[in-house]
Image (cartoon, rainbow, N blue to C red; front, side, top):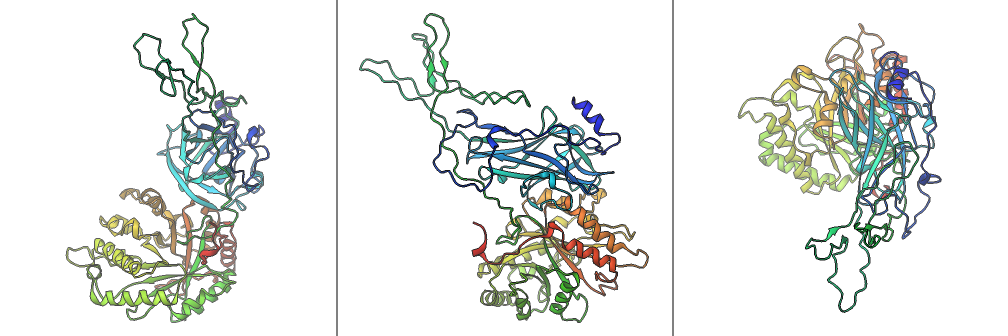
Length: 625
């Protein structure tokens, strides 16, 4: 089937996939019987696929398929195309691919590219696509949108437009040894759609690894006392008397067979030259030779068999959950937090606490107590808003603030050794005084934040995980000083956002994706998720506060948002924590999740999502090495 015919058969209207499995997936011979965790093979020599060539090898996928939020049956086997994005009839589509690499096709020093030919490009101005690692599974044919493995690290993001014929993702960081690897390709653009070529195409998806292969020199020829001067290793001798310099021996990449032919790549040749027929006038032809190269020993560790946090509280896959409860009330906040857990029937891994008193040290005994239940692992998110000095004064070393920070560091070091989230003066946009000399300019905030983090760390507080917590209102991205708030990559571990439904536009149709990533095209604002991906791609993202307020004019809106979140999280692999803000009276609005039985059940269902299945690990000794 030609590419054109395939497109026609798949698309009666944009985004409607009508043909699924057509051809079985053929596995390359080198992966038969190969699996992760089958044992080490140190010191074993193997015939490498390139045989002294340049180390380039194209791996065909073991499996390539897709899941979609509006398709409840398991993923199709070997579909003709791999859709990504939103389309009528599919909902939110995410493509999944699995590859196997062994010692014959990859070496320790390598680069890796996931190459996906575009079958149907996006309309309009194009879209962003991202690739993330996911846990490999026995068969992708068992996947649905509800059972898909949680996202791991995002390795690359690429803009695709109508002229793009192939997307090349850099996934070098994902490949750390021979083994089996899973990838998911998604997009944060909620109204965009494209189709990649499936395995049926002549040139379908592939994982290209380029290993650094050291040159292999032939053994020197034995020489008698009157032998001519030796030729440098790896070169061909010149014609006697020609005066020419030695000619380098032929060495280069293996020639590639026609894709889909089933033929193995032809090895490049290298080594000592064979001699031509005397008098033929032909130059010597290099022969294939050289010792086999030592492979990397062992197998890749399946780091996604369990989603678990690291020392910076970043999950290797999945998303943490948390809450702040009883906000804007006189209720004891720790009691309110425990009541929230009971209501939603799920332990919240992050307790978000707000501290403003300048003479009070934190974490308090009650806060620490929440983290000491081994059956319900929790950590803290301490939100400190200093009151005793202006931002510029703190950054300049205000004596009162310095003394407090030193006492605080001593208290933390003595009483709390678990990793915890910490931010300074969250949502600073609302407090900026954009006037020279005010001491409260955006640049003063950035300097103050940096000063506080650096002073605490200098005093030994090495369990502090810093969060830059922005306010999610679009009016603040219009101001010219918005970018000046950022304190710097070295003092920010996470980027957080406060987002609330029915605050940016009170139309009753606001959903999870909009509170996380609403764009403002007039001011060139791509949305917070896009902004983090573009400007700070190495930072995990947190919804440091989120909530949905009830309103008599929009009954059922909470339920709609909570249900949408279950599907829309498929758009956002960088989102690694969501912390709900529950209050019966947040400036006259109610965000509690139990006001309506259907909304409560939708939130409980969200809490059971596989995206949120993460083990919070606060013990460094128990983490995988």
